[in-house]
Length: 398
Image 1 (cartoon, rainbow, N blue to C red):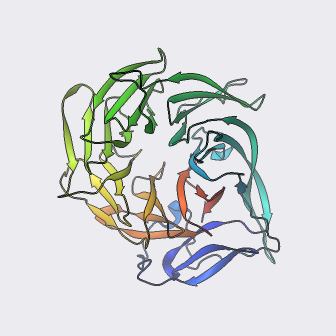
Image 2: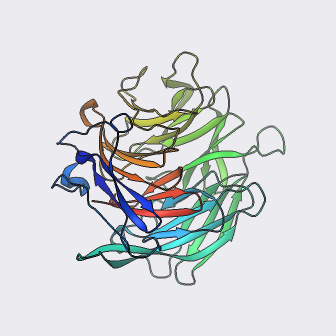
Image 3: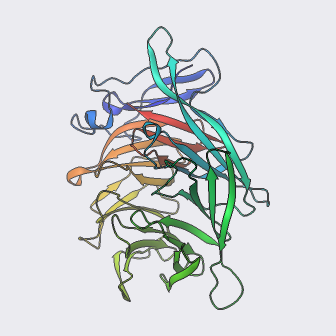
């Protein structure tokens, strides 16, 4: 049984899943993935400094570091607590049209995997430890970024967005997940517009922001379970909102009007439009850089291009990442490195980029069996959780 891993692109090789486990797919066409520089990523990302893709094989059909649900999956987050060498827990949510959706919690257990005709390598196993119902499809879920689960008997909080903002508590001792509170986003009527996303403030974990199809963004105070601020953020539906790094007042949002807007809660008279091209398509997701409050990444509907933006240079992207050959579904900055981000798309690929010095080099790549719906980094940035179909695959960077 072989361990899935991301490999350096200097030989244009990627890892893909075959029926017998994992195989090396060989050279990739330059049109799909352009050549990378010899100086990108390197050992800081755990890259293979020998310049060759690691070839992994499996003698069984069981996939290592993999969890398969009974239902299609979408939302995912890897806990950012600093324990178990950054392995922690992964939360996923199913995405079905009926009212039988679920949240599932997996514990990542460190193990040693035996390579065929080779030494053992560190890996993990994903064990489901808890599950709960979530009737409406979950558009985003996040672990509390300032978890107290290191404390004996402490619980770990989880937030989900869908029909409402829900706050959950996971107890690692009893391995139970229960809903603690439900917060409704209501404006002029009793109707609660569906939520498209959420973000948990990494500086003050009493603050959560949600975005909604009713054009609003809402800042919630979890200490009081009431809305601290609600504002009309866009001209049309808002699809995502994220706090900028190290700040409790500044957040960025994207939506159906095709613009990227930055708001400061200390001055809500106006917002700053960072990016708004002529006749723009809707922008679906935005990711803020945890190491640099000025860097953002976003992508639009039915597009293979990811735009990297700098708040200090509004108007046009500083870098455009266009190596995917199908629609992009997810983009996330690495938690420990300012210049690294990962993208995932319908071309079944996860690409890890180095965007330092306004460049756009692909350092690592991983290929799934089907379209990749979502990705998440672990706390230390050496694993990526990949959601495709009904499964979540933990992939180690090397």
